[in-house]
Image 1 (cartoon, one colour):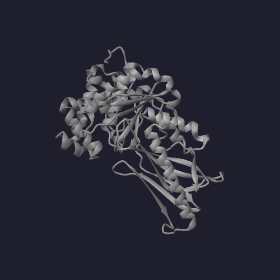
Image 2: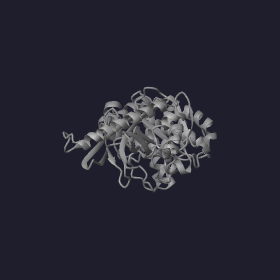
Image 3: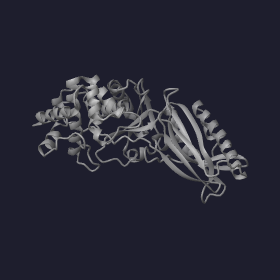
Image 4: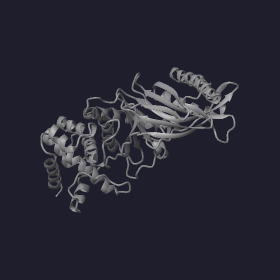
Length: 429
């Protein structure tokens, strides 16, 4: 849907995409120090390694810990099989009654999301839970796929607590994952209503269930646009979209976004990005633009994120270009804000234009507008495919921008940068 000049749209917004670089968790295993190192490898998966000063020791406490870990693994395998089979009673069977309410909600959410892969891998050895006699804590790496069978699974690391009941471990609780990089997944903490289509899966809260039919239609339309902007030609198996109410916006993936944020995409591993939209204040037309913008991030960005702030204009500019969906440049909603910024003394540099967390709405709109106009000029000069090759060289291959421009566009970057700036100034002054 396009809009007239007298109907400004809210700026499309993105919280910077996070890439999990590594987590170090200090454990105390049977009174002996150990370090669990978890990191993202090139294939996007995680690996966990228990490093011990006495790695070769096989004392009775260590043997007992291994045996307990093996028994817990067997219970988790049973639970995983029950989840995939849709057997709620089997999913709950390994747990104490006090954990059932949380597990019922998780089971329902994961089944609604059409979970097709679910694996639980223990990491390290169980450790006694402080102040809880007879209880043990164990980090577990869960891996999941939605809708598509055999996808590269997304991992999430969570603490679990167990009670050893006569040689049979009983699950006491599954803790929320609280990674500083990705935060807590929606299915860990919320009831979800879900709709799926050929290219997308859209989830929201039961209170917003009525929005799902229109959201799914909008998401499917946006996915067709976003698929065109995958620089490597590899598109997501499904775009995963979560539509957050006010409370969920503050809790899903850790919350805490700048007030101006309307949506963001977050890397969750396995080659997947999950998109979150802020339901507050979004109009149908604004949702269309925002979906095209955010899904383009999901299709265009590499798993490890983009190189740095100097390339923000290119990353956001491409998403804004997709969000505009071919409308004439004169109808772009952020022109007024760009004009104000240029007239107030913009320094004429594309790097360093990312807005601060506390930036005003006008400053945010002008930043995104500068990125859009620069990318728009490059597309007008070279066409979408060559600009996508330039994007891939800078963002995926992490080549210096001078080298990337020469290689893909055949011209020196300083001259092209000055062209983009001159185009922007001529358009708005």
